[in-house]
Image (cartoon, rainbow, N blue to C red):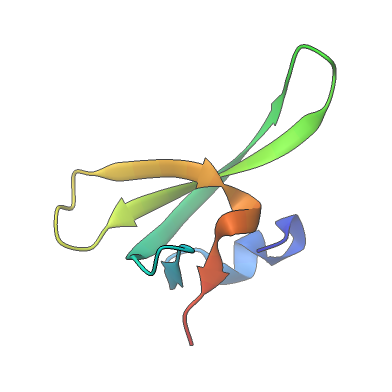
Length: 64
């Protein structure tokens, strides 16, 4: 997923490269020590609702 697709996909089901399905609940913009900006996705597990996974935004694919 690209940063421009974040708002349109909030609350939707998404898939990671390993095939697991989550609900996309948010994104964070961060800056590392070298000044490089990167994006992280916040994903909620569909079976254990208190479980949140943080991963690279570019690893997330929207499930149709």
